[in-house]
Image 1 (cartoon, rainbow, N blue to C red):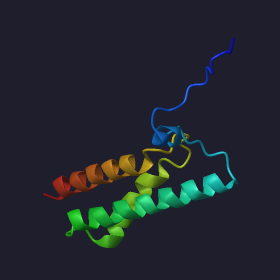
Image 2 (spheres, rainbow, N blue to C red; image 1 turned 120 degrees about the vertical axis):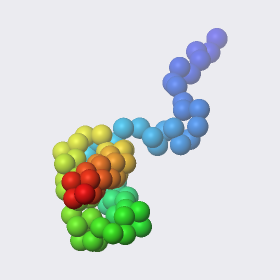
Image 3 (cartoon, rainbow, N blue to C red; image 1 turned 180 degrees about the vertical axis):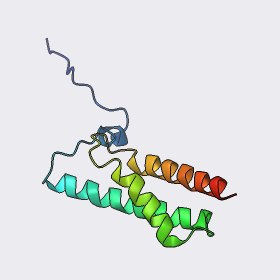
Image 4 (spheres, rainbow, N blue to C red; image 1 turned 135 degrees about the vertical axis):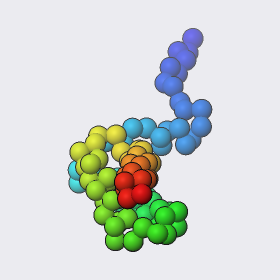
Length: 100
């Protein structure tokens, strides 16, 4: 009688890749993650420049980088770009309302 394999396998291959990412430092996966995260932040900057053409580019970059820096020590890295974009939009909107 054989014993069934009790290991759970993800239903979809992409599910295996969507595990929590933790920065431990130094290996190739960490380097790739940081590169992808940086690319995502650069995409946020590009999107926000299109969405808010009246905000000077350098100001917008500072807002995004400031929001990004707030997550420097975050362990869960999957949603950093989304959170940075949300925070930057909120800050830009608050500044616009403050000046009106």
